[in-house]
Image (cartoon, rainbow, N blue to C red; front, side):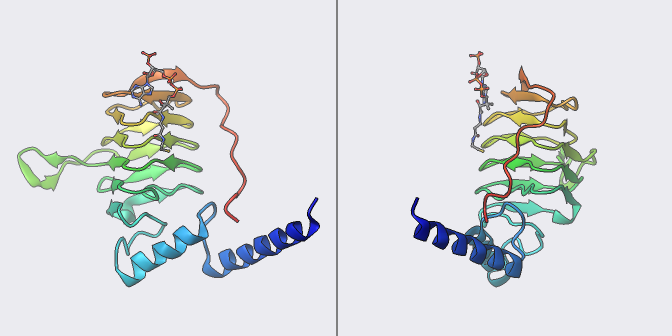
Length: 188
Ligand SMILES: CC(C)(COP(=O)(O)OP(=O)(O)OC[C@H]1O[C@@H](n2cnc3c(N)ncnc32)[C@H](O)[C@@H]1OP(=O)(O)O)[C@@H](O)C(=O)NCCC(=O)NCCS
């Protein structure tokens, strides 16, 4: 075993821990991504009102109506649109691919300047929303729901523990009723 290398890794880990604490980098968020995010938000004003880290190419409408659990950062990948006019509630440890859309309100078909009321989007714990999937107003997804790439979720699947895919999304697989194994914080 190369003890010198081990020692330097430990030092680096310690340094990372200090930087994470000083900059208050949220759990499971990469330090470099977080620093870039601060630049886009507070220097260039992109997504300034969004209190969690989001990619500079993503947009969040009505971020004050988003409620997030632990380690869930919708829009941290490129090209997402998170529209929370009717509210979005997300549980712990959810991941979202690039280009995901969470759309909580439709335009009024009689007047595009207005939005129609709907119940909030609710996403449980340990969910994974694949690349370019879209979740539409009022949808509720239970714990450990996986949404396949490019799917359009038009109805609720509150029981969770399933894989959804297609347009409109349907259950293609059931998952065991235990939460997935979650990695410990590996971005130290
Ligand atoms: C949903 C997903 C996880 C399912 O993977 P899987 O369990 O291995 O599924 P399978 O490949 O066995 O497919 C099962 C069936 O569902 C269909 N299917 C799978 N994913 C689909 C999708 N995204 N859209 C439509 N149909 C899909 C398959 O064609 C197959 O249909 P068949 O039984 O008629 O042949 C995977 O297909 C997927 O979409 N992953 C998203 C990856 C991604 O977005 N990553 C980047 C962001 S984090």
